Image (cartoon, rainbow, N blue to C red):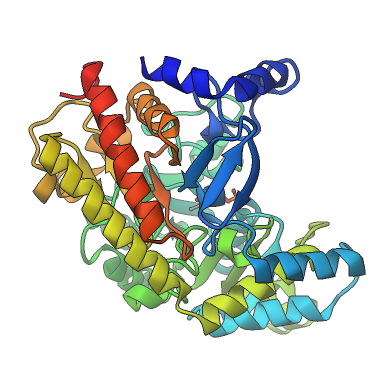
Length: 451
Ligand SMILES: Cc1ncc(COP(=O)(O)O)c(C=O)c1O
């Protein structure tokens, strides 16, 4: 059994998980780290690899939930953080690094006339909605089913669950009416709503499509949204928490040549440490400036946050974005991902496995065909399945088995299933991953999980 093989390799992780379950609910600190029968407990990492407490080595594609464009513990980032830790982690004051960090964002991200840092992507998403509502004087937010914008109440329904728009436990039912949750398989419903309603403050979208492109958007979708939001005075927000500094140096907006009004950033932004930002049009961000807000006849928008642009995260962010700007890291990660996607697909074809592999830029997405559709892995087109057939059809058990089978062969992917390729992944890692993929598919086939 796949699980037996996994458990035999990971007794130290199993013991830690048992201990964790006595203190952490579900033994976890993030829903996406759930792995059955137990997660691996990591002890150290370097470049594209990490090691668990039992000494097993993994090629890592979880990539710090997408935060690590340069791989783990990239020496210039380590050095920047170490230097800063000795100088102070929180000065409770303004400092030069936050200015340099914002300037880098401004240079790299086309929409970034102004930048406000936050503690996380979730906080940035919350601030972007607040700014948009205040700016337009309207309240409704248009969102798309399965697009994840962090875990705050306003964006929880339909993000990772409750795709029918119903109310998840713990979320006030009154909030449901504040969002307009639409499908994104086709732009028509969004365009009709923008045309027909006058209460929409903002449209927020993952420009990759839901969950870093697990459900790609149809061609022309973003351009149509841009045109319609501009025409109807609605703020267009790109959530570039994943795509920022990954889809290209300037994110998805630079890759596609479509500039939103506001951009939500995090992950690579802070060089592998916590941090987020809202970047965007000066007029909208200036609501955070008492003088500018007053001059524009607007109320100043409140925004606090103890760890906003703290020196440690700012130092990591400056080091990371300086490298994004000066190096070809995005292109190298993308080239490695391309090679990986091609190899994964080739092995599906060779083994007659009716699954799909796809993905853009430096991510890969695996479609493990839970409904056992007849499909040709050589010509798989995710757009033909849409949300319902992709993220909406997920089989968590099958995804977990695939993940565990790969872990048992020394590869860690994200639960999507899929993963993030860094600029540190090279031919050795790809070759090893392809061997693990072949072996994992063989095990899954043996156990009739794959036909
Ligand atoms: C697209 C997107 N938006 C927002 C967030 C929330 O960011 P954070 O986890 O930093 O709160 C995430 C996190 O994965 C994300 O992928």
